[in-house]
Image (cartoon, rainbow, N blue to C red; front, side):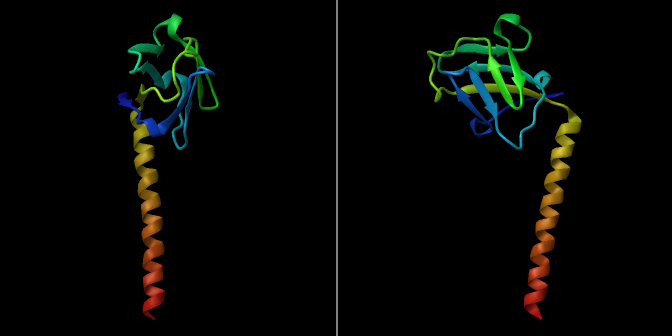
Length: 115
């Protein structure tokens, strides 16, 4: 498995509700979420290996056990996930397929306009 740090465009943090919502097309399983750190507070707010810093995960939303209510939604987080090789390969193949479909559409338009 490869570890990856998510960009801030991949999730939304709601400090008051103690949640991290992962945005599409990112699809995760709870076991793929390794750690969430609040960089402004220099605090671990989720750690898969620590029952006191755990949480629940459902429908793309990680609800944290850690009390984040005094934090800010705009605090910078570091979200570390693991990706299985098959997940990465599936993403690459999907992107290649989308690119090919787009190129076919462009080629069709060029051909039709040239006649």
